[in-house]
Length: 161
Image (cartoon, rainbow, N blue to C red; front, side, top):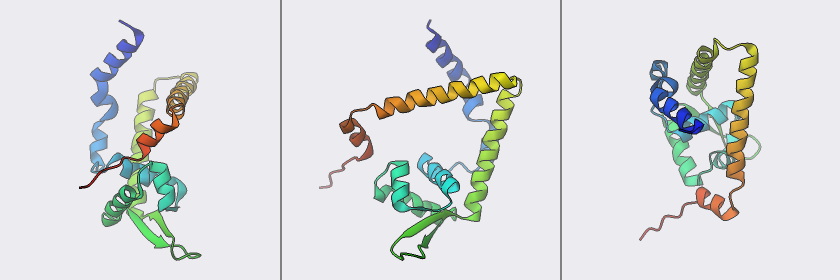
């Protein structure tokens, strides 16, 4: 059995413990990944336009509008007009949205600290380097797609009769 198969088997056997700790159920997980990414992006940037959001989550404007509509309806995101150009709609997190993202980040940080508590500082630095290397490898794979393959991922045409 290869090294990769051993790692996959280990992850599958422990997936529930790794990715679904009981603490996560304390946070409302009714959100789609795009909604979470939207709120994380807003937390990082504080205020964004719809165009910036569309580029970040890689969806059509209509999909991004639906995502924002749901988040506004549930009071996690607010829409405001730009002071300099009233045509521009700016998005930002509400207090409730900021609190949710803070709880999520605290939970993930605590979970990571728990998972790495028995590692030495040197081992933690090594782990970070490995994770960054894995992320860079995955990103390079995405970036090396042929342009027509990337376009297929970005825009999906739906024919309506």
